[in-house]
Each structure stands twice: as structure tokens, then as C-alpha cells.
Image 1 (tube, rainbow, N blue to C red):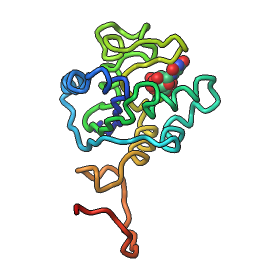
Image 2: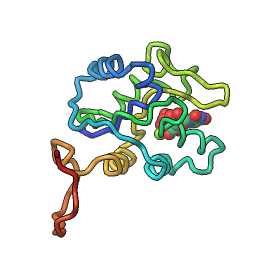
Image 3: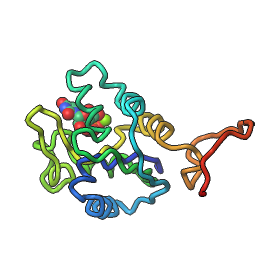
Length: 167
Ligand code: UDP
Ligand code: MG
């Protein structure tokens, strides 16, 4: 079954110059990239993304981590991959959440680490199931940033809003 999955190259992945390596590994899946952009992550976006973990003791740290406050890289690269069994294929390549338990040839096993304060810096986010993927893709992307029609859309009439254009 074809499905979409949200991938984030987290700030440690960017700081360690792993973007190319990670995209090369992901290309082994033969999935299609249907959206990609760099994002400066607000506290609001990070908290919404990880809202299922808000009761965990490490919640505050992973919010800082996703925002880039631990790596002096205040951005992530967000992508949507699409194709047959996309979630399973990408999660397998990513490896286990804990980089020490991840298969050593997986992305997290190759490049992740556990910090002295206990955060799993595992260089990549991959949606965990289809409903999470839909929730996350709708959170990170607007319909016109994705080159295929993944989910139903509606037209919203709105007054001309102020927007930045090239000077
Ligand atoms: N995380 C952590 N310690 C934990 C569990 C999770 O630092 O004990 C971090 C880790 O960076 C992970 C993120 O929180 O990627 C989200 O956790 P989740 O359980 O959703 O794991 P994932 O889906 O990313 O494998
Ligand atoms: Mg998860």
C-alpha cells in the first residue's frame, strides 16, 4: 500500500554534515520525495510535534533538541517520502529510537549518540504509523508545498494578506 511519511533531519544531523549521507541512505528505499524544505522550529511547533510525549521527563530536553538549542543549528530539514510501505521502510533504515540499541548499520546506529544528560540524539525523525504521519505532515507542510494530493483540501477565500515578496 502506498503511503506518505514525514522525515526530519534533526539539528544534530545538520550540524554533523550528515544531510547527504542520510538522503543517500533513504534513496535505498526507492521511495519518491514529494516535499522538502528547511524549517526554523518554534517552541509551539516542536511541542505540537512531540505532544504524545509531553508527560515524559525528557520532554523539555527534546523540545530544545528539535529547536536546535543543543546544537547551535536552529533549523531542521523536513521531507515527505511517498510510496509502497514507506513508513516501515524508512523506520527500518532509521533504526531503533535508542541509538545504542539501533542496528549498527542503520542511520541512528551509525550516527546517533546518547548525551550525558540522557537525550537520544538520533539524527532523524520518521513518523511511526499512518495516522501519525498524516498528523505530522499536515503540521509541517501546507497542501501547496507537497507536489502530490495526499489528503483532501478545501478552498478558503481570504482577503489579500500582507506577505513578503522579493524586493
Ligand atoms: N527520546 C529520548 N529518550 C527517550 C525516548 C525518546 O531522548 O527515552 C527522544 C528521541 O530523540 C526520539 C524522540 O524523543 O527520537 C521521540 O521519541 P519517540 O518515542 O517518538 O521515538 P521515535 O519515534 O523518534 O523513534
Ligand atoms: Mg515517534
